[in-house]
Amino acid sequence: MFKRIMAPVDLAHVEGLRPALDCTADLAKHYSVPVVYVGVTSTAPSELAHNPEEFGQKLSAFAAAEAAKHAIETSGHTAIAHDPTIEIDQALMRAIDDTDADLVVMASHVPNVMDHIWPSNGGKLAEYAKCSVMVVRA
Image (cartoon, rainbow, N blue to C red; front, side, top):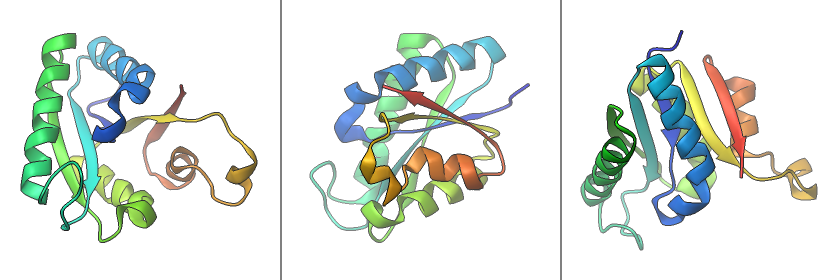
């Protein structure tokens, strides 16, 4: 049914994403499809990496660890945004096309009052993406 799964990851908060990451791995096994882990970063140095190349290496290492842990095919894709905090939705939408994903599996939080002011990233992708989006609550 699916040919490629995209899973957005925040490398600074991987453990909080574990339910969505495990769901992604289960779906990848079930459909025998690869997973592309997408991380969004800027060109400016951050706590995670000094530049996008270093970020990409860390993302690739994360993808390799997930592949070994779950026995699935994985890769990493670095999406660049001037300000990832503000442009994450647009960067993830571009990444869907860049990775040729037909399913996005991503983590979300339990909705709260702030979601009426700023919609969640998962909700935004589910509303506008051309592919299926599964939002996994932590």
